[in-house]
Length: 287
Image (cartoon, rainbow, N blue to C red):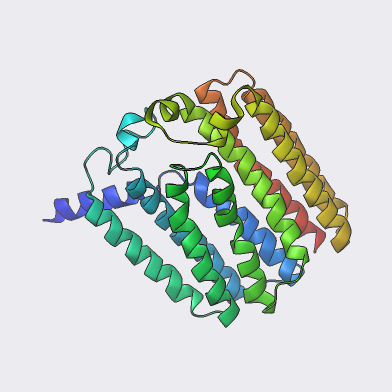
């Protein structure tokens, strides 16, 4: 009985990608950007705690929903065929129940914040649930993911200052283009399999211009981040962080130059450092 329980918990943890924290980092950094910008570097401790825990819970829920939605596709893709649902180790019913539990946990956290934050959280939940299905009918699921991964920014402002000033949308736009860049790199890993099974992505749409478009998205993100710093009067520490992020972006371009699967995946993983560089620069700027 005990061994059975341990096995189920292990499979649920794998379904939630606890062993692969990259998605948590990619969601955490823009969340912290938003909190630091909204609070001028002094976020409320409880709000900060809620958002950090919420990032982990919602990213886990998103992974479960994604694997449930892709349960008929993942077994045909080299990178995903060993995932718990695709491999038959977790049933679709179990996945739905786990997603509901995680969603309830996230909503319980949000209930401790402002009414505006609660309303925005409901919109965010729709984005998270909708994203996995968009790859069936549009070549732009990367932008839907970008919207979902950017939604914590207005939520951070709503929680911290109970308003949505226009400056936050500069940060949302910068994050949206960043997500489009790194998720296109991620889609480049699976492109051959996705074409074969009929799944759509920007990597397929852009074809031989995939690297160019990743560079365009990276450049737009960096330009918006620089403009944000000017508008907010941030100091040299922030621009040092943006410069470091630009360096990581160039390194990622080198990694995807030959479009090799392993190198494209490395480029995707490297974006955790891009996000960290921006946050460190912003945090130091507010000291």
